[in-house]
Picture 1: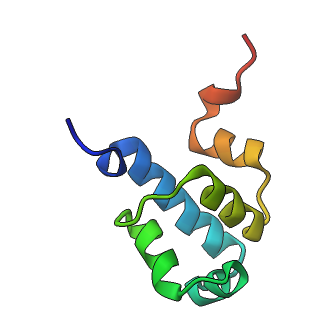
Picture 2: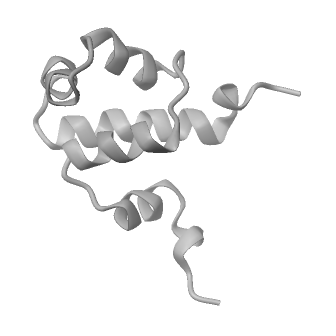
Picture 3: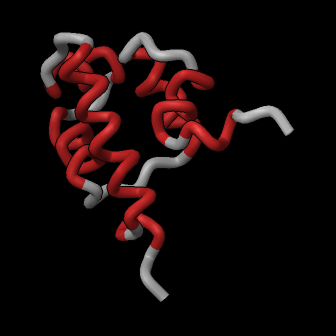
Length: 83
């Protein structure tokens, strides 16, 4: 079985985080500074070589100015459909 950071879903999330950072007009260094981490942290999660936990993900989307529900909807619109 593939490790989860190498799945298509995980790679899609990494691409979305990079896209949202670009849309926010922020560099990797600026995001890293706001998170209090090295720039390589941002580079590694955007490239998929570093796995994020849910707490880290929440901090990142906060810095990007994105609401969690919006992020989930952009990642996979079917997640938030009403039943």
